[in-house]
Amino acid sequence: MVSNYLLDHLFSATCALDYDTLKKALDCQKLICLGFFESRSRKRDKPSGVSIERETLFGQNKLNVLMRKRRKNNKKARYFILLVILSGIIFYAPSKIYSIFGNEIKKIVLKGNVFHVEIVDTEPKRDLGLGGRKELCQECGMLFIFPENGNHPFWMKDMNFPLDIIWLEKGKVVKIERNIPYASVEVFSPNAHSDQVLEFNAGISDSLGIAEGDIIW
Image (tube, helix red, strand yellow):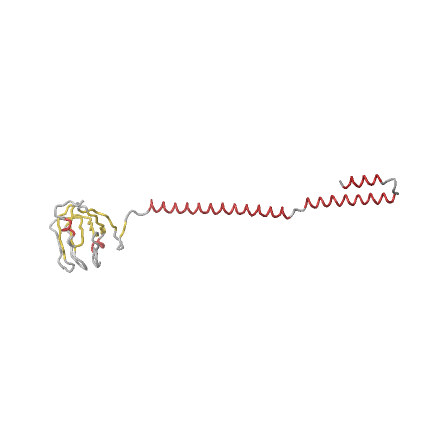
């Protein structure tokens, strides 16, 4: 638009101007055109502040999206690890329960009553028994398991509370000693063979009505 405007005026004034004046006008037109196109080129090449700001915001938004995805993936990974741990606990946790004394605990039912008895099936554990303990809970007991059927005598060494002792052979009661004082020094030897012996707090056998000949299990 600037070039056409100048040319129109230059041609209309050609007749009135001499050669030098016309040459100066043409030179002036060239400078104006060069300046116009240079300014257009600079505006096109140089990014504006708005475009820089937009690019910055776009980059920041992209970074935020990536960070959110990363946090989401990390959260999923933590849940997966927790699920694996819980699965291991459920499927691989030991099925046996032990007392604070290191003896396996089993649940038994006597005359409809549930008891939790400690299993002692090695010679050192059988020799110790309940000796040295201060008390035994009412629903607790101790089951002595012997490798062979035989005559197995018991006594109250190092006991601090009275007991009922029940001798069993293949789950059948063959002998009962009731309300044995903890200070007793007597050795109790049944006149029958047994492979297991139960010890409870004194009075349990009477309260449950357990008698010789009963089948416990």
